[in-house]
Image 1: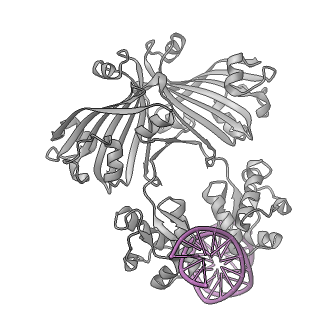
Image 2: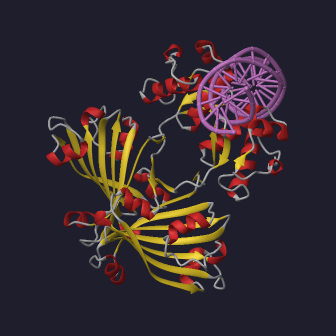
Image 3: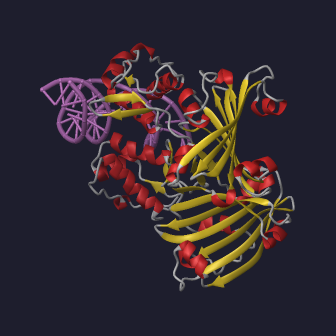
Length: 249
Length: 249
DNA sequence: CAGTGGTCTAGACCACATA
DNA sequence: ATGTGGTCTAGACCACTGG
């Protein structure tokens, strides 16, 4: 357990004191000056050094611990953490928003809608009973007139209100659901597959063309709400995210 | 601006008071009892109702605001937020860890290494000068003996120490870099492409087979560290993440 | 102006883990 | 036993902003 130099912590006078303390220590950690495993001075030492109250120092340290830069334990004190495994945060925007951010004109078309009972595969995928009512939707979203993504969606009718009266003429199903349903948990999967015959025709691409497949299932308090498969032609679509080792940058 | 019922906030006596308050209000929001746009009682009202000090109430509300459930403004008060656009958190594990979590045996092989100057494409991709030194690596990672992912990597020699003495015989480059370099920012992109001839041969798949392409570029304080392209045969690989609308579940 | 949240203090008691 | 962090209080002053 290496020592750390207390007088290395310097405030810059900008903004709240707790944030000055947080940034000062953060900079010492990310610059490598305080290596992983070295001990951070205890709160009372920082209080004296910085002329701040313990609550203020504490607030800075708690936030750094939440961000994963330091690890705090009673009695044994605070140490610099080893950098965590990286994680990628990918924004899954609503599709209209996604297209508009590309600077292209958005349009969509509901190609098919069937209301009824779930097929065995859908029921299993989703943990539904065969007797539950579901709506199936097939939607193509266009950017500047060209197919952008193909959406296949199943909605659990009991999980949302007002579904039977909605024809999705004005709002695509994804955005409508965001406004008319609650959800508490979701599961995403991303994989690559080749386009099937029907899919290729609807997306105006060749059969077997590589596509990104984004699958999302959504629940509210363990009750299924919706499942969706989004098929993006891969050569023109990518998901991008920017961030640092300790979270969004 | 609808009203909210103050007496709906009930503590359960479990854990710290600030956390009881946080959970009580969170439950009212996610259950839909307090709809988006309704105003949350001001701190002094919650103090009286709950018999807690203002700092304690404040702490709970600050955390809820950080989580995006409520929006706080001076003078106009606190309101329930409308649910944010969803985001997907995808863990990008180290590849050995990824394979072991699948319960398969991990192995890797460095197929090629060249040290020298960057090609024009690499230099542009990475913002390097032609005069900077880089190392190129081609690595195949195997799971239970079968190719799992193909790694093409460029390392900026000036960004890490000890690179020239390392032969990557004991540790694959990705894990070695995690231990021997700092990074402060990264950019990821995920797309789908068909395998090229050489790639297909190395991955033991058919040419044109859909693959997930994960590209990551990493910087430390604006200085490039490494860029990597990971090519996963798509039919057997997927990234999965679970979370709620307000963050990891 | 007045009501709201943002910050900060000085002090207190408690919980926990280790020497 | 003691030093650490975890929580909580009562009060204060300030910053912002809508009426």
